[in-house]
Amino acid sequence: MTGFTHTNSAGEAHMVNVSKKTPTQRVAVAEGYVYASDAVLEGIREQSLSKGDVLAVARVAGIMGAKKTPELIPLCHGLPLEQCSVELTVEADRVRVEARCELHAKTGIEMEALTAVSVACLTLYDMCKAIDKSMRIEGVRLLSKTGGKSGAYHADR
Image (cartoon, rainbow, N blue to C red; front, side):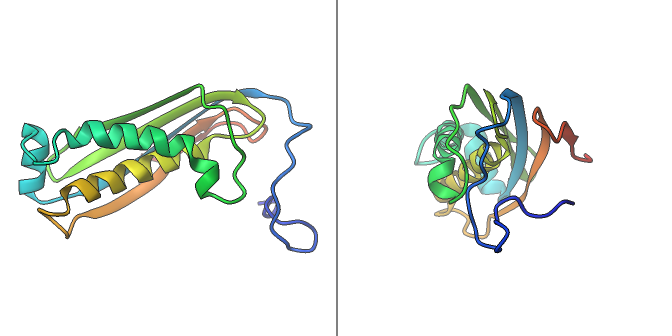
């Protein structure tokens, strides 16, 4: 590792200068999980929760979160997202959230994908907490990224 890019020679936080970088096509995919009770998962599957279709709301919240990433992460560059999708899958004991973000730019889009997943998970928690306050958000991580000087990254599954 060559060191942190968000600190200057004096160790002070700063925004990385990307002005001389060449734009490339960049894609990032992230995932996370919301573990919940059987009652919550059944309500989500059957769309019988009093707050309505929580998956649809979480999907939109995740996309909105990706778009607001530089407002939440202090040194993150504002990026013109060209695509962002958030997919939610109800599994046996959890909901899996996956976000995919894409653009053509000078810097990466990993933070947008991770923020999309995080906000979608938090939205699910918020909408279901009346039934199950013991829900857990776990496993938020980058699955893959392509583009840029550092090349491709793919997490171990």
